[in-house]
Image 1 (cartoon, one colour):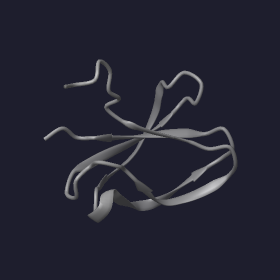
Image 2: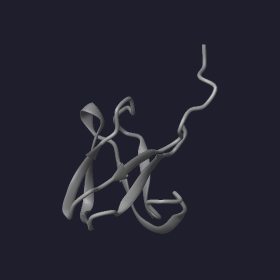
Image 3: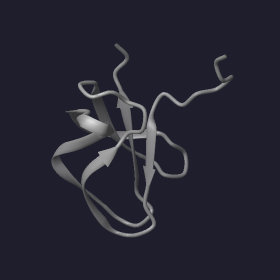
Length: 82
């Protein structure tokens, strides 16, 4: 059975300043490519393409460059559908 609604991306929101060197994408197999976008935290609107990367073992994505976020910032990781 399929759910009625399923997000096609992973959203990351932050309550404090951080430097993000990697992210975890639950349920995404190693080898899949993901695109990462900065979004407006309140509306979810895509603001800026940040980078592409590849999912590694266990769903971990080592980012090619760290993402610096400020309190209230958000970004999404969008897996490419194979």
